[in-house]
Amino acid sequence: MRALQLTEPGVLELRKVAVPAIGPTDLLLRVGAAGICHSDLHVLHIPFKMREDPLTLGHEIAGTIEAIGSDVDGRVVGERGIVYLCWSCGVCRECVSGNENVCLAAGRTAMPPCPGLGPDGGMAEYIRIPASAFVPIGDLDFLQAAPLADAALSSYHAIDGAREQLYPGSVAVVIGIGGLGHVAVQVLTAISATRVIAVDVNEDKLALAARCGAAEGLLAGADTAREILERTDGRGADAVFDFVGVDATARLAVESVAPNGAYRMIGLGGGAPEITAGPAGGPGWPWGASIRKSYGGTKSDLINSVALAQSGRLTVEIERFDLADGRAALDRLERGLITGRAVLVP
Image (tube, one colour):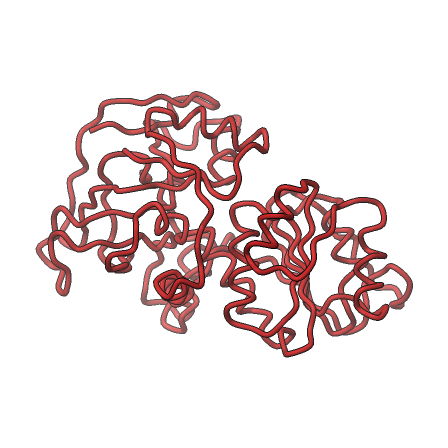
């Protein structure tokens, strides 16, 4: 089969490799589509080899069951689904509590094995997955389904963890209307009565946010925090979802979140929010506000995301590429030229 593989740091090649063998608790999936994420760029730029043999990238995967392990029940060849990306142990306290994304077996890093970040991923014609990671999608289009595995999963999880702040009359700010951000706007409007303010450096992305249900859009700049305060009677946003995570967006979140509000840090830009233990006041961290660094999501979050897509309340803006054009698609993503989510088709 063909697979898009990281062979050396920064070197991505389309290679011919063997179709993976499966074990008794596995499924073999024929890949229908694989989304491209900023995490794939991060892996591409890691200055050392993640493992000795080449690594197939891709953790947003949709496809059809081609073969079933001998110990697997309840699945049939030809069934269509997507892959839950947290390949957790399934038996620890966190897993049985429904918190598979922070599986105890993953230690303090709390990042269970994830396809394309350790095990081989789905930017290929086939992938081996644990049967427990399969989530059915019915007749949902693969191009729409694949990005749900992270773009919707991570957005839904961050939003669900701030539901207390998303009451009628509340205001939520979404920073960064990219692959995750434009999905987050739709999730917010689908599951809550909050008013969404979108923030981005690009007017086209703000237009996308408006199509996704945002009530207002703000072009990011020196006065963005003041503009948010003006639109919230000086108190600030009840929830701020940062899908960029650089210093500027972290600072914006600190300066614009309301007392008792929620700041959810999803973007992995390495930004420092500069929260101190000093008295609250001025542009600093307000009393009662919470911050949470959110990773992935639970399997339940993914199932809920699929249900939103199947009901027509969640549609991913996609740009389609052939598998052979994967490197070009990654380069476009790095230059900020992708609207929504890039998706590869084998």
